[in-house]
Amino acid sequence: MPFLGQDWRSPGQSWVKTEEGWKKTTADDKNNNVSVERYCKAEEEEECFNKENLLLSLNYDMAAKKRKKDLMNNNTKVPYFHREKWIYVHKGSTKERHGYCTLGEAFNRLDFCSAIKDTRRFNYVVRLLELIAKSQLPSLSGVAQKNYMNILERVVQKVLDDQQNVRPIKELLQTLYVSLCTLVQDMGKSVLVGNINMWVHRMENILQWQQQLDSIQINRPTSKGMTLTELPASLQLNIMQRLSDGRDLVSLGQVCPTLGALTEDRLLWKRLCQYHFTDRQIRKRLMVSDKGHLEWKKMYFKLSRCYPHREQYSDTLHFCTHCHILFWKDTNHPCTANNPESCTMSLSPQDFINLFNF
Image 1 (tube, rainbow, N blue to C red):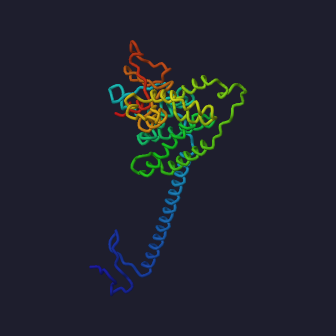
Image 2 (cartoon, rainbow, N blue to C red; image 1 turned 135 degrees about the vertical axis):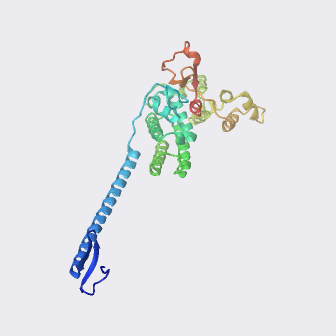
Image 3 (cartoon, helix red, strand yellow; image 1 turned 90 degrees about the vertical axis):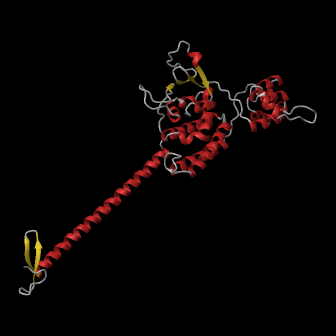
């Protein structure tokens, strides 16, 4: 029977079990085996070291690509994906059509890019952007959120170029910034899509746009024709009656004392109150002066704080209840009804958003 240790009959030799059976090994063979094992171990350590270096380099490359991707997301302008004049709004799956249309999909596919260039649709799009900024931004997809910011940038650039509609855009930016301050704090809860650094960069852009709008200087027109102050008082009042915002009247009254006196006309403020608010709302907020007259100007601003203004737009989106197609007013859609106008309804910005709340 072989010995497991050294054999006393053959000093310096040992029995070692191999795949071929038991064999005798001397001290020199043992030293050679140790050196071979050390060499193999050194090779394994070198291979592990190379693998670690390769893994670190891969991680570095991935981090560099991620930083480059974030930079591209911050700086690259995504093209406007669709410029369709009408879209089909389906609210459920059928045999012919799978899925349903969402607010983000409608926002991407409809032609809002050219709508902001149309003076008839500009205020409609701005109001829609404001409503989305208040409550609907988290419901948009990542593509729609990026498209929202790109369209907003075009709106701001248009205002800077035309020097018109400055106040509503400043209010829109302020509303969006306040909403983003709240949403960014909830990052990680599937509120906003994308990296937090990307949204911080977008918030910095909003602050920069606000500074540009604050520093805008409206240039005096170069035409030498008749100005507003040179018109008769009756024509000046006629022009003032076409203003639908009381803040515009106040700003107009600050131009000169003559216009300031005309903007205090009680009939102007009475018509504004009756245009924006119902009789019931007006009766709840009556304000009488010491002379027994109704303070229409004070009532207007008090009613404005309590009730929303009446919205009126030159051009709006329309919805066909027969074929479920959403389209712009002056765009023909493929309706199969005998009388398409009878089944068409105009949508306010709030109605447009409610159309997808199902």
